Image (tube, rainbow, N blue to C red; front, top):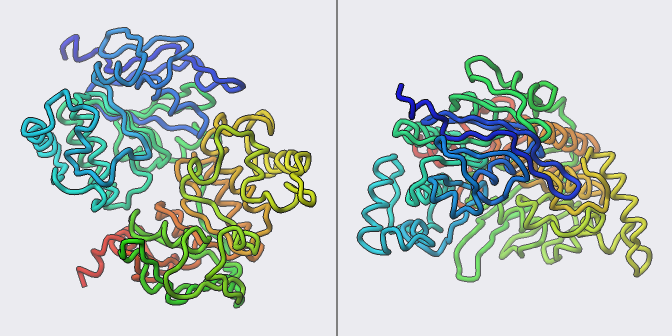
Amino acid sequence: MSESASVPAVELHGVGKSFPGVVANHEVDLSVRRGTIHALVGENGAGKTTLMKILYGVQKPDRGTIALNGEQLTLHSPTDAIEHAVGMVFQHFMLADNLTVLENVILGAEGLYGIRDRARAKVAEISRAYGFELDPDELVETLGVGQRQRIEILKVLYRGARIIILDEPTAVLVPQEVDALFDNLRELRAQGNTLLFISHKLDEVLAIADEITVMRRGTTVASVKPSDVTAHDLAELMVGTELPSPSTAESTVTDQVRLELTDVSLVDPVGRSLLSDINLRIHAGEVLGIAGVEGNGQTELVETVVGIRRASTGTIELESRDITGWGARDRRGAGIGYIPEDRQRHALLLDSTVWENRILGHQTREPSTRGVWLNLRGARADSARILEQYDVRTPSVDTHMLALSGGNQQKFIVGREMSGDPVVLVAAHPTRGVDVGAQAAIWDHIREARKLGLAVLLVSADLDELIGLSDSIQVILRGRLVGEFDPQTVSPQELGAAMTGAEGEAS
C-alpha cells in the first residue's frame, strides 16, 4: 500500500461543539479509511449529526482539528466542503418535484458543466457508472422514494464529491429498496469513494459497513469491525442496554369500534385520485398498521382522518359519530391524538420553548387554559410532568425546542398527545430518526395506549415495527388498500412485495 493510500480520508481529533445549555460534541476522535463505508451510530443527542455538519461545513467546531486526505483544514461553509470533495445527503430530501432529474441535479451548480449537452452527458455518465438507472428527463414528482434518494447521491457526485455523508439513508425505504441502495453504495466504494453512513438500524449497519464508530453523550466511545460485534453489542455500547424489541403481548382488541372509514375517497384540486374506496375499522385496544412505500397515499390517509384534508366521498365515524364534515380542531377535541410524520414541520415550533410547545393543539383545553385565558402556570407545570413521565431529557421547560435531540422532541410529542386523553391515536412514523433508547420508550407508550383501550392507527416505514406492534396490517398501494396481513405470520419481505405491487404481478 502506498503512503498516500494509507492516509485516512477523514481524520477528526479533539473536536468539540457547544450550544447554549448543550454540549453536542466533546473530544471527538474519528478516523475513516479511504475507500471504505464507515458507519456512525449512537443515540439521538449523541452528537452524530452535529459532527457530520461540522465535517460538511454547516457548523464550525469550537475546538479540535479536521483533516481530509492528510490536509488539515478549516471549513467555513458547505461550499468549502464541496471544494474539498465532501458531499452530504440529508435525511429529508431537498428536491423540486416540478423539475426533472437533470434539472434537480444541476440546480445551483450550473457553472460546472452548463445546463445543456455537457451537463446531460455528465449526469448520464455518473448514473451509468454507479448503476442508478435514472432517466434525466423524468419529473421528480413521478418517482418513488428510492429513486429520489439516488438523485440526491447523484447531486453530490455531480459536484465532485469523493467523501459522501449519508444521514439515515434507509429511513423510508422498503427492504427491496434498501438492497438496491446497498448495491449502489458498494459500487461507490469499489470506485474509490469514501462513505460515512449514519443509521439507527443496527442490522443494516452490520450488513454494509467496513467499520463502525459508536458515539455516546457527545463523544466517540468505540470503533469496531462488524465481524466482531452483534446488534445487541452495538446497542449496549450506545445506550447501555440490550436492543429493544417491538413485540406486543397478548391481544387487547375489543368489539368496540373506535374509528371507522367507509368508502372514503380523496381527489386533489386538479382531479387526481389520492385515495380510493378506503374501508377500515379500528377497535378499542387495537393497533392497525398501515404499510406502504412513501407517496402511495398514507400521508393523505392520515391527514383525512385527523381533518387536515376533507374527504371527497365516503364517511368517517368516531365512536359512531359522523365526523366527516368536522375540522381538525373539532376532531382533536373529540379525542383524536396525532403524531405527525415530520415533527419539525408539523408538530413543533422549534424557536419556542418546551412549555409553549405544550400548548400547541391544546390551546382551548386545560391545563393550557383557564376560562378564556391561557394558563401559563398550568402549561409550565404540565410540561414538567411530561418531561418526567416520558423521560424527555432537557434542562428545563424554558429550553427552546430546537436544542432538544430528535428523540427527545419525539418523546415530548407523544407525551403531549397522550395528555389530551384521546380515544384514537394516529401515529405516523412515530420512531423515524430516533435512537434505540427513544424507540423503545415510544414503543412502550404505544403498547400502553393499546392496553388502555385506545385505537391506534400506526403508519410506519419500519416493517419490523409494524409487525411487532400491530394486531393487523393493511397495505396501501397507489391510494388503495390492497391487502390485509396477519403480523403473526407475515415477513418483511412479503410486506415489501405487496407494497411495491410485486405480489400482484407474480400471481
